[in-house]
Image (cartoon, rainbow, N blue to C red):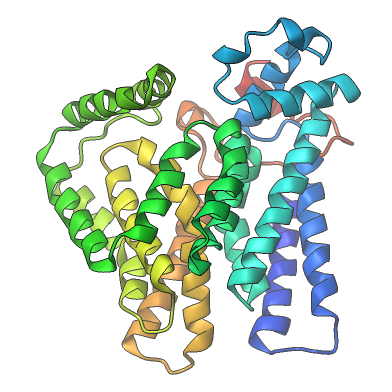
Length: 384
């Protein structure tokens, strides 16, 4: 547990010294690089931390070497670039640790580039990112997290109207995780759509979703996905029928709670100077997907693309506006509230072990590096 706490304390100190106090006696750029290197090592050198990490390790064991890959049916591969990365690293090192380090290096370099482009409050943003999404991105959704930072960096070119460069830079994401196509298309549509139209469509979808039973909605989504091809339909159908991502029946209190959680993006959408036009439209899309997650869990995968922009917009607003207005207090409250929810989610045991004596999420706690033996409690959870 201490490694997580120490990283949290370090980021808090750096955020206070550089972002809040405006400290200049230390080299800010060197500390930025130090934080990124630390997070790369923290993620890349973990030992069987994260349940999806185990799935990636098992898949890696079944991948062929480069010489054996010529017999593979490439037409059947939905994410050939991820396959190619694993095959090359297996050929060179034959150790999943190489994949972990590769993923961590690429992810953090692209995250660093995007955050530096979008804010001057690097350490504060990284503190929120570390607490809210970093552990999920680096311990669970490894492929998708690469797509997230690729698409976010590509979206920077939409601010300059460079659509060709946006599409070109998004190409690797399509071949790493086929599902990224949906968010690439949505963000491009946001660029073309008027902000008011995006808002009106989102409101219409809000009311429409509340009138359609989740099972019926899942059927519609599977039917719509079939238009994009059989492969995409199978992927969508798999996610929508899986217990973690399927439909959920919400009562009135559940709906009100989902609406309450929209407080931060809504306050930022109507705040002056907190975001540019594309950012505000991304916040509207975040609000829509966040609300839909209450009915169909798969939409949480889409909010992952928009959580980092949400954090950046929130942090930027607080540092740009020093006056403690009601709006300022509201944004400050929701940022802290989101932080609390995320840290609680990190600690809370997985549904499959809640009935046991385990009072923490053994998928992540305690942290074990490759220089240590795997955690025995975690191995029991994994069934080993």
